Image 1 (cartoon, rainbow, N blue to C red):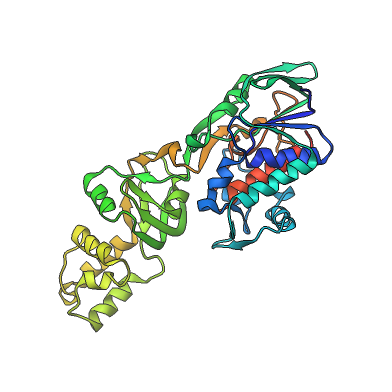
Image 2: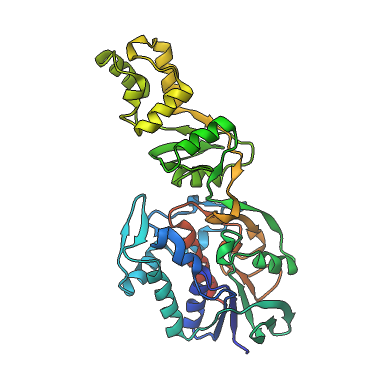
Length: 393
């Protein structure tokens, strides 16, 4: 097999790179070690694929080299991918905060990518392992389970370490290391927190499955307002997943359970209007009855409102607006949506995604040290980086 371009990894970035390169008339071979292409696409967004975000911009991405993502995101925007979705007649909707989801199933997105690849003449081989890569005079030679392959351009689109049950591996990092690239430390991102402190763990376990809407969660100078979810292991939900990417072991996380309320004023008003009401009765109007009772039991003294001093009411408001906790850790790659860190982008062209260490070698998608926020940003990075590399390979 002697294609012009070999792409390793038939996920979001690999598929986009393949259809773009083949659309230019390049002979493209797309290799995937799993038995199906786009497994992460299929399970994303609860099976409805949050395929991009209306408000995508460079500030939605983490990287040790924050300027790297700007070029690709400007050259292949969310509007470009939305146009592709519209071309295939895939129905979609905005859920919230600019997040675009399929009306039907994630397979709508995967199928349109596979159709574009097939129409452009991409050859896709599934269940194919790459066991060795060597630099050759004319490009690269590969030993694969489907036989030897040689090519001019080699694209690594193998993803990160998140969700190993879907086939995630460190393959891309190994290839980068083989050709002299620096790897920045990797860790799980967009991932739930685990809690081990006995009282707090019991609190979370008791409330497992309970969601609180629009909490303000802060850590290390970053804040996100979204829902939080109690689990039997600790804390999850969109706001927790977002802040996890900025959290380091030992850091304190602050949670404002009611950021849209002036709590001191509200509590004072309630004390005046309903002096005989119990605090847990009052809080049950803001949270579930169970959560209200647990909050009072764990944090406050239960008594009628008229018996609280103004200082005590202020302390209650402060606690609800600034609940501080220190997670024991995260659930790790098993449930993480993305991998933080990866290939140092200072050694990769921001325009072409070609290695600055090994000509003809390209890296796209999650394998690079670029990680988006929750809400369709990581898919947009896959589309943008895959497209820009596909224009030149």
